[in-house]
Image (cartoon, rainbow, N blue to C red; front, side, top):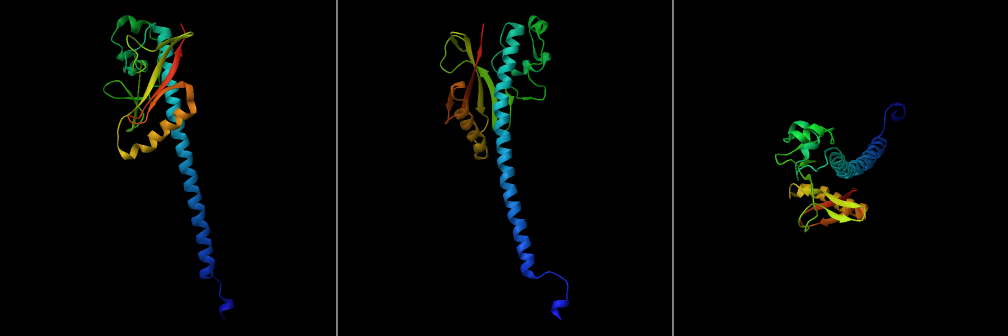
Length: 184
């Protein structure tokens, strides 16, 4: 009589549910890895984009933006000097970038970007090299919250991958200096 009933046994249902759970667990792990690689690429790309924007600004204006005043690269209205505004051909950074009150580019609640000279360089920006002058975009910890540890791990990974392009990584302050060269 049981052989004529249609349906699934508990064992069959348990096997199907187990397979589904295994597939979900694998996909969550893959998704997390993809999300991590995307965030790493976003931080690295933003470092390069800010460096490129500063270089283009310098080429057009013949001067650098004030330290930490990166919003002048995205919005002509932020420029207070009429001569500078006359030669401005930007935007040099995407207008979708967020800026804080002091002019830093905000990447997340954990990370901000600044630019300027190397730590310890007195009397001006960058260091003079045979081909020009080196300048630095800084990735700076915006928070010391434990939830930001993945972001700081990304900075360490970027430091390892970029090698000689990174002049300094301070694991205690969570600051990475990305070197770019302006040839004159």
